[in-house]
Image (tube, rainbow, N blue to C red):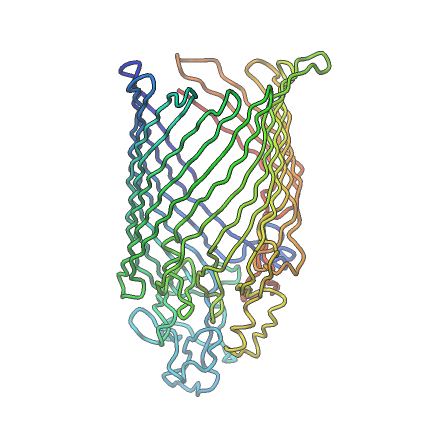
Length: 594
């Protein structure tokens, strides 16, 4: 379900001033069933679901006020101010890494009978390390209203209903001046500005113990999990955070001559992030970040071609989720729980880019042919990049600054118009994304981790669940080659049809950061679309009807894959998960513009 609304109203009280207000809202109720094991899809088909339910509800409201005023022929001032409210609620059925503790104690009605422990803590109850409910009691089957089967076999198909609720209220403004004047008898454009953003965020999550049914749906038991008896793993989170971001920026474009210009820029960023743990002190923290990011660019114009080159730096501060889960001694389970709050460094990006763009005009088969094109190549490197590292418990981990990553790539596009009826386009992008620092990465389901569930040793598992990357290993989940091409035909002045193809090359599975295993295959898809513009009913109101068909040959393909644990019975046991692509789909609608 998707519902959106957008309104843009503009007012010009005089020739020098324009005011505007944008108002929008969006409501979504989305069902996403996620990735599924390859073995499960082999057994049940491409519509197989691993576990469910998986629902996400989003609400988004915003209002944006702004304007532009020309003080004189050289100076203008622009500004805007906004408010945004966002809510997200997740309801997700999943596995729960727990099992019966009763391997080494009497089942004859003792207090420990049916005690629930962590998945690999086989004798945890005897050591006092069971899983606690919100009342502080070690969970047993009496709490659940369940019993062992007739053969006194352990019940191991535990599931979880994960609920989370995120709310954000954000406010900000930006004010900017543009001075377009001559300097040393050459054209010069100076832009300066101030930006401020504030947000107040709250995040809460709970985990209800459930039982995975035969169809892999998770049925709740009414018992909510709190923590384990040693307090190492938390299943309830109640976190509030406040962020302030301030930026001062400037950019100056100076024409060295009629065909060459140089652009110098700088941006000073300052950020404050305060975290308040509503359940204790583990997530308490106040973090500050600042940096000046410079940039320089040169543009050279020829008759029909413009070439350019630039060097830019940028930075991003760690997010609340990253800071709340950054302690290797207290790994967390994302996105449902946070554990501790040690500091992380901000990520710095340095990027070099060069390219060209232009236009061509010729005559082809007796018709005018106009072509616009652009080409660019870039090299970028992230310093102190942040990734998720596996912890000492299965399915847990923490964020860490791990070193450097690099992206080398190129992009190319052509857009053409042939006569009055034909249009065409083609786009291609290549990127090689690699790790540039050797590091340990969490990969529980990787074929090389050598973990034996039946002969578990926690110290060995700490090593078994991670793999070590080398410099030059490709970052998984990124297809090096992506292309698209299409052609359109104007049947009538108000009716057009088009066909396009899209292609994507293979990619490594997430969890195969060492590039050892086969890749997720690439794909090649065909799509059709048409649009018919309706006659104007009211002055200033335009409307059209559209129809689209995606993947018209109903190709089977996957958009991505990952290695993960597969503990759910009846799914084939494979730890190789994939996300099926969209099958043949037809949809249509009405566009109204006024």
